[in-house]
Every structure is written in structure tokens, then in C-alpha cells.
View 1 (cartoon, rainbow, N blue to C red):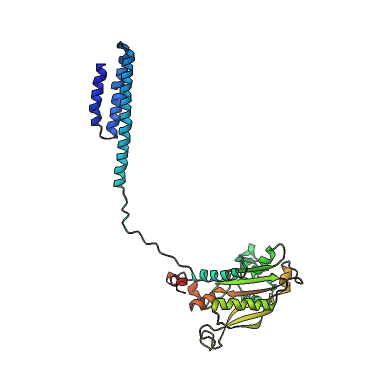
View 2: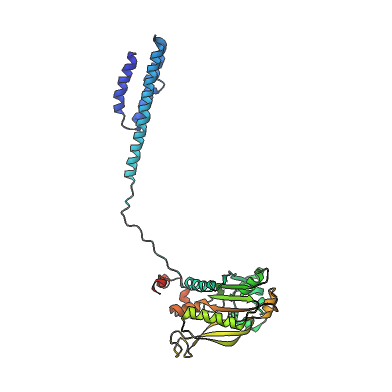
Length: 347
Ligand code: DAH
């Protein structure tokens, strides 16, 4: 019993000596290790008389040590963590690197504006393809091989094994794709914005530019619907005062075909350099869908009629934002794109 008391006293002193995790572990070895003080007390049990009391006392001492060990360990670990946090602290008062606020590209801006307008009139936005077959880009739009109107739309052709594939020259291809995708061969009302390609390059023509196509098919669709729709479209986009005029024209996929002019928004129709002194600016091609085009995509041209229209989105962006050279639109110069930042806030 004396020995137990001795070791208990010694433990009281040793507890004070523990300053870190290492010295704590040394104490564990010293007390509970193979030759530890408490372990050795256990060995004495054979020699004492009152084994029961002796055993209980040794166990109590072991418990005391274990409690001390666990509590101290937790406290030391917590301390170590706190020290680490202090040492590795990040100074959040340092100013951060500025994140540059992006701005929408003018073409995205104008595309969204047009889409919104047509969606509000019940159209859905249809996605066409940029790589198209000769069949869809021309033949099914009533431009068979050798048709002279193909000359105006020379483009980029794919190599041998894709001989009949090319980069589409017009979003009118979406007319064919939408009609063919419609299993019921019933009414349709779509717009399709997207990139098109041609072999052109100057201040007002780029080898890649954007168009938006519209197609409406239903029973009893007439030229009056076409006129009403496009007049509304031009006024919404260019202002209520805009005058709209329709001129007869020719497109292989429409009959009759028209070209749509608007009164010059720069001079109001008096004549200036933008409208080349005519007072008018041509903005759209349109017409009643040619029966051949309906039939080639599986529609009954006796039951259904349709009207279609197409326009260059770049041209509209150039007019609307006063961009003099189409090439700047695709030049990727941030100084150009940034000018359109927050444009809608100032509108
Ligand atoms: N696809 C024609 C072009 O690129 C524009 C066009 C004219 C589209 C008449 C139409 C249309 O849908 O009916 O020049």
C-alpha cells in the first residue's frame, strides 16, 4: 500500500512536468509501459495479503493516470491546433485581385433581343446545323445542282469523304430541318439564329456572319400574315416611326418573293450616306414558301402554306450600334466588345 501511495505522489509531481505531446507520451511509457510503475505494482499483487484492496487501489491509480492522459492529450492537441491557426492565418484584409466584369458580345445581345421578340409572338427557337449537306443547303430549297442562284452563295466545302457536305451559306437550311423533324407534318412557327459562311471578305462582308431565319406553316397562311409580322418586327427593333416597304424579288425557295426595306434610321428617309441617298435600307428577304419546298420535306402543299424570312443579324447590329466595319465584330478585340458593357442600363 505504501508503494501505491509513493507512486501516486510521484504522479502528482510528474503531471506538472508534462509540457507537450512528447513528454506526455514519455509519461505514458513510464507508468503504463512494460516496465512502467503501475505495471510493476500489478506484479506485486502476489506478495500482498489483502489482494482485493491492493488490486482495487492499483486499478484506481491506473484510472487516474488514464483520465489525466486523455484530458491532457486533448488539451495539448487543441493548443497545437490553435497555434497552427495563428501561424497560418490568412490576412483577409488584403485587397483581392479584381475580377473583371465581362460584357455580352453585341451579336449575343442582338440574337437574344430577336429571339425574345419572336418567342413573345409564339415562335420557338430552332437550332440548325453549321455543317450541312448540299441537299439541305440547296437542293431541298429548290436550288438543284447547276442552278445559277448558287453562284451568289459559294462557300467552304468539306474534303473527299464528306464531298457533299459544306458550311451552310444561309439559315434557310433550318426550314428544311424543321419541316423534316416535324413528324406530324403540321403547323410550324420557328426562328433559327446562327452562323453562316460564304466566300466574301470586305468591310461589309465577312466569310462568317450571322443570320436569323423564320418559318411559319399553317393552313390559310397568306402574304398578309407575312407583311403584318415583318412590319411589326421592323418597328419593334428599329422604332415605331420606321416605315416599311415591300419590293418584289426572287428567291428560289419562295414564290412570290419580296425584299423588305425600312426608312433610313439615320436620316429618317431624307437621304444620307448610310442609305446611299435613297432614304431606304434593305433589311430582309422573305416570301411565301414555294410548294416544291413544302413537298420535298413531306408537307402537303395543297393543305398547307407558309411564309419565310431571313435577315443578317450582323447588319442589324451594325445599324443599331453604329459599327462601321463588320470585321471588328469578329476581331476579338476587348476594347471593342467592352463598349457594349451595360448597354441595356443606359438604353
Ligand atoms: N436565305 C436568304 C439569303 O441568305 C435570305 C432569305 C430570303 C431567307 C427569303 C428567306 C426568304 O427565308 O424567304 O440571302
